[in-house]
Length: 354
Image (cartoon, rainbow, N blue to C red):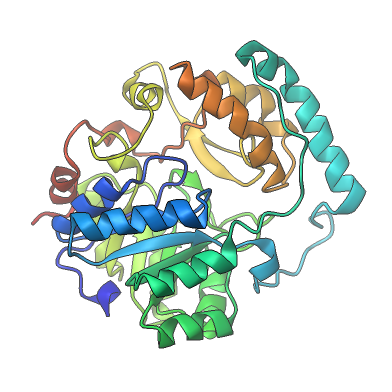
């Protein structure tokens, strides 16, 4: 399998919204690792162009990450009292209230906020057909667990499958469904937490402990993700049973990444003192640099993905276009200080060696 035979134990994390580019994926592959395109937020046509660009740039294996829409998610979570997900009118009203709180920001940026729309198929079926047709070696899934039939069909087509999990319960469900490998995500990672349910609180266990527990119950390859930015940390998680480390934040300032200029500057700005986990930008828990936007609105954002995501997209785009980070989602793991302006291949060598 590709996922169990990397030249170096390094995976370039898929980072949706721009940072993951074909050039970045190819550069990680050429350095001996496994790069991933971020299929989330792209149309099937846009993703097809990026896949073709990777094939043109490199002969190395690579992967594509897909977001699992709620309609295709087979993970069933028993909800405790007080944790029942928002549905129907309650959900619509909570999203409407959050939209109202964002109007002053939108006015300041000169944009209009869309009316919230429930549901997000994300070109799911077309993207599944695409990765089979284009013979993508590996497909990873985030935000949900595809059914056994989907995973089996991909396997018959020669596509290896990986699912992002955040605790032992999710790992067991993914293995039972028939995945070929796991991305085990710890609490220090930047960007979205990969829980299989949007409402679920991810495990607070340190990544080394989490990898060790998951490894006890399975023999499939494990990509350990979350806050890995140094060689010492990479060695710790590899020694606990990980097959490879999955790294995202440390690649954000590389020249191959599509990271916006204001985002790059923020990562290097000593004025930022910490990262926080917030629902403010998408309705799902995600770790980002703490900004005034996050401090003022985190408690207002409902657990309503993708409605909250669609509400904030115009704000984030306008802020990036104005070269102003104030309304941007500055996704970053706890090791963001180690992100440096160096080629992706150099980052691979710095973290896992040759």
